[in-house]
Length: 214
Length: 214
DNA sequence: TGTACATCAGTGAACGCGCGTTCACTGATGTAC
DNA sequence: TGTACATCAGTGAACGCGCGTTCACTGATGTAC
Image (tube, rainbow over all chains, first blue to last red; front, side, top):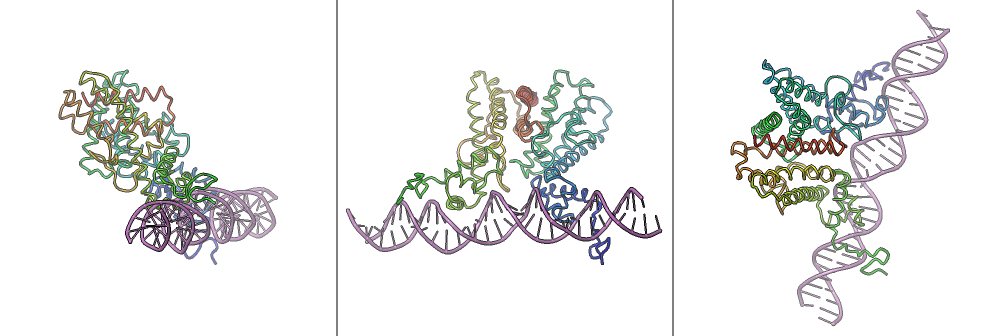
């Protein structure tokens, strides 16, 4: 007689942490197949639970997907933060330039190494979205847009970016890097050999830097 | 007794041009809902024909989708060509610069005004894709990549772009413009007000031009 | 410390949906003689 | 010019799939007394 614990597979009747388990399963699904692969039944299957158990923790599939999207965006931001922190250049201008490039590299690296997550990060269902200070990365930490803004603020503060050119600089840098990431992962540049990809990335970063700072 | 023609809806038993009708229906589906909305049964429904009639003209759904994707890409190229041809500047350098900007504007305008088609253009199923001379736009006309290359060649010929900077210039310009289009249509910049979008586009084009030509 | 009971977190079966695809078929067309 | 017949382009029914979601339920937990 199994009382608390099923003696065969050792899973208690109450999962204990099903919400987390569903999010983890959803993240794995997203990793492999992008946002469309985040399927309620697959997540519950993976968690070893019946289909509708998920409804104890999420109102519907969209709510689960939303959480997964936020986590993916957060992962992207974390890689960017990590790469920024690795920059050791003491000179304010060169340091700010290196940090800007580091965020760009991180962005593209993330997209290439985790294309499913990258696509999912931007697959927030329905209306919402819209980036800006405090939006887009859930509750904790800075989102990619904010990290980019920080770099550009640094550049401005260090005197490498005039006030005039500071305006709208986010969208220019972001577009270039996002476009490369999209072309490489979902677009016609899928499967570009490593060396070509590196050359493309270097050129994009150079054009952005030269274009912004004149 | 209807012999050749059904007297009620005047549709002959043989459609006459079902292939074209299915492609047209598919294009409308793509326009409204992107590549995922290109659904065999919906296309046949729209064409007023039974589900499986489509199999007389396409091996499977993917084959239809592929045709639709090519047509969408062709539409994008046509708008770019049209906008390039509108440039009247006689000076070779200024003319080439204006044509480059015109292709970028066309690219973003297409994405914003026809987001379903834009997404579909890049949703070629499975492996394939990869741009380059002669690829990506089906059989006729120049594809977007080639049009961009033409602009850059002009710029180089006119002396505004050094040979060194000519290298990899396509990917830089393309990434920036594609990224803006993606952010505006599928990403966090969805629904950006017109004025802000115009400012963003202007900045992106300026950064690309300055970044490329130094 | 023991027990009744509300509440929480699961189960299992079922519904309805729309899809791609296949099957055996029939009506229409065009061509050889 | 007429006719037999191969071929082409449709039809209608069905299969199997996986999905999101709902229903009535039961097992486990925790709390008031």
